[in-house]
Image (cartoon, rainbow, N blue to C red; front, side, top):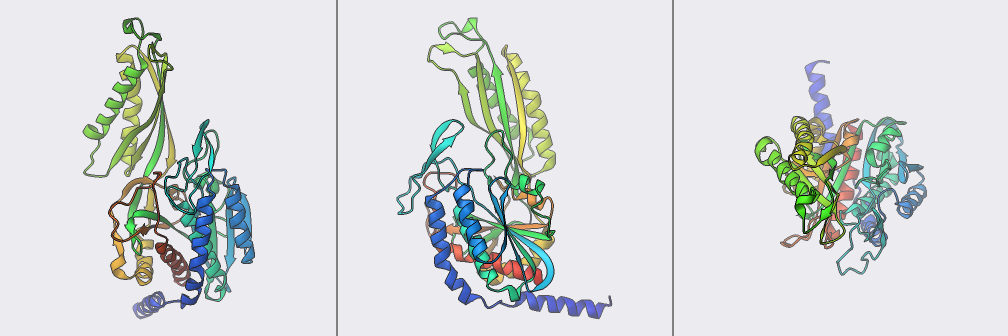
Length: 424
């Protein structure tokens, strides 16, 4: 290819990318539906791998749009395939559909009052991470694009994914299971886009990171074995609670004294300790569970190795025994830099350049990373905070709340990114 031809192709590509697809009428018509869907899903949340009614609602909607629909993917996942009027590449769009074991504390007319069981405990169920908005947004994108097949050069695959928050103990689920079952095949996906609402980013703003955007997440389980005795005679036993405290203290030195935090962030958090039944009994055992977050594969390997060395060594120092099991939950969410560069003109056109902002990598995690491990992907963050609100509550909390005025921007962003990508 000579230089002149290549230059002309670049100019034509840039011209195509700068063009609006004239969908304002469709966008205006869909906003109220997206909000209605979001509220219904919010009021009727379901835990991971148990999203039966949510999946039924999604499947019915996609079928009403005339799509080819697959259900029961990775237990409760739904996939819709929309073929454009012209042949071309395939782009996938993903939304997660599961809720969390959190009791909602908001005073909303569509507040969740649902309860369920999680790890044998009765819990409230709440969309405390915004997956209800992701689902409603993608349902809106599906409707807009299904009405504009003449603008689609290729195929769009809509992936509604269960169990992003993690499958129940003893079950598979989530993005990894979807990948194993071939969700990125037939037709083969060339690129994938996704978004996450953020309660502490103003509505109307899109933020992104090129390269590593979110951390790899691992869970760990530590079992400590001591020797039971009367609480008044600690010398006659081996205290697993004391050992657990020493282990927690020791693990934090890996982060504070061994991890090069000027390179990337890293976190070790113990989220739960279970031990004992009575105030005056030193128990025989204790269990701790927690999470590890890393943004660098070398740091991940070092932290894992040191935890595996340190846990049994500390227990032995105090006369007990301890084992640790570490399991992968997600990979590093990696936004392919070339794809980011290609799509930036689109999101700047949609949101307005001042409203598209870079951000540093987050220690939160996303199993969207498993899709990105297979195909190039771009994962963006959508503002969901009322502008000017200085008291926005974080995700995974009972007071988490989203400003619905930001949802339409999500519909526009995923729609325009899909069309522009397929026009490249």
